[in-house]
Structure formats: structure tokens, C-alpha cells
Length: 308
Image (cartoon, rainbow, N blue to C red; front, side, top):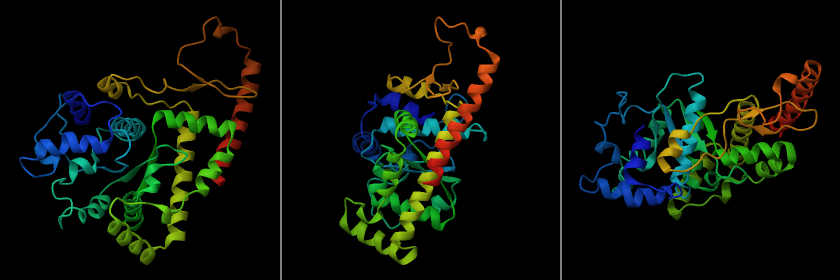
């Protein structure tokens, strides 16, 4: 709720980068106190009585070069999925708000990240674009992954709606692209704005699990991500991000997904019946046969993703 309020009240464009939001909104508004942004909104409460600042359940690992709107879209989608099994609302640790941007190098700032991860239910790791995620090319994001492994905290990847749709199309049209994406994972090719950061983090990776093991860990988590997204979407789950897009005055990438079984292909549909088709005239025998074909095709496709 607070993030939506933050976006609406400051008229932030959907495609403004997270770095731009930090530089133009977060940092100026907290300059007078020279503190992290959460200190400014500790007393903020929404209409339901939910506080903006509480102990976070989820640590967010993301790339500042991505659109801030896409980050919020992914958190909204993640929350929808989490709400299927866990009672919300959910609180996320987001660095531009939680770290003092006026003194990033302070001795108390960055060392707190492993402690936050250790106390979190999971690390939410953003994938955009899914075929070549920016987060896998950034040293700090990989370091956060390493901390999750060390703390034995789950990694829960997520991606924007449009990227999910592209991924789902790829499963059916050209699954070799998924193999190619996993083959490109190479931690040693990651970059950092500050060279000394890269050197320190690479030294920690080499001393702990090593680069080969790190690459393997990243690939394993990506496989689990793709499997989970495929299962959620193909079996009719479709979270609503309408409130988020209303805040930005944009449209969601897709409506809630439903799939009609077919002997040859599957196609996304809106929740409304097709115009000109009498749904009551479907033949029961054909429905059963098509459902069986759908199940077989789905198992083959998802198994391919899981076994890559």
C-alpha cells in the first residue's frame, strides 16, 4: 500500500528507473535528516491500519537500471502468489528505502544486509528480461544470492508479466532458448560500478563456494523459478496487478490467464467466453480427450524445463 501511495503522490512514471527514483525522490526527501527513507515514514499507516514500516518478510534483490514500475509490478505479482497460501499483507526490504543513501559506505549500512536476509522468509530475485536477467550481470545481486545460500534462505525469483508471457510462449515454441539462457550463466562476467566492490565480492565467492558451484547454484534456482511460473500460469493462476497499474495509469501486460485444452496447441484466453461460441454445445467426449492431450503436452514441456 505504501509503495502505491509513494508512486501516486509523486507522479512517478512507470518507466522511470529505480536509480532515478532514488536520486530524484528518495534522496532529496531524506536529505534534511541524512537518514534512510524508512525513518521518514515509520508512522505512516494506510486506511486498513497497515503500517508502512514493519519487520520485512522478504528481501528484494533487483537491478537499479530496471524501471521502478516493473519492480513494483513484480512485487505485486509475487504478493498475489504468496497470498494463495499465506495471509498478507507482506512487507519487503527494498534497498533504496532501507539503506541510508547519504552514507552508503557507512560501517553500519552494508553489513546489515546478511542479517536482514537471515531474518527473511525468502529473497525475491527479479528476472528482467527473463532470457538475460540484469540481476545475473550485477555483482551485488549475486552477492545477495550468496548470502541467501549461506543463511539457508530460499530464493524466490519473479519476473514482469510481459516477460512471463514471453517465457510461456517460448516453452511451446522453442524450448532450446531456455537451454541457451541457462548456458550463459557465468558469475565471473558480472560487473560492478565500483571495481573494488567486485574484487571484494569475487574474493568472498572464491573463498566460500567457488565460481563453478556458484554458477551451478544460480542455474538450479533459475530452473525452480521457471518450473514454478509454468505450473502457476498453466493451471489458471492469474494474480491481479490492477491497483498497481492504476497508480501508474498504465495497463497490465495481460488479463488473468485461462487455458483451454487442445490436441495441438494451447492459447491464452480472457475469462470471458469467445464471442459466437456456445459453450454449452461442447462435446463431453472431446473435452475429455483434449484434456488428456493437454496434460501430456504440459508434462513434456515442464519436464523439459525442470531437467535442463
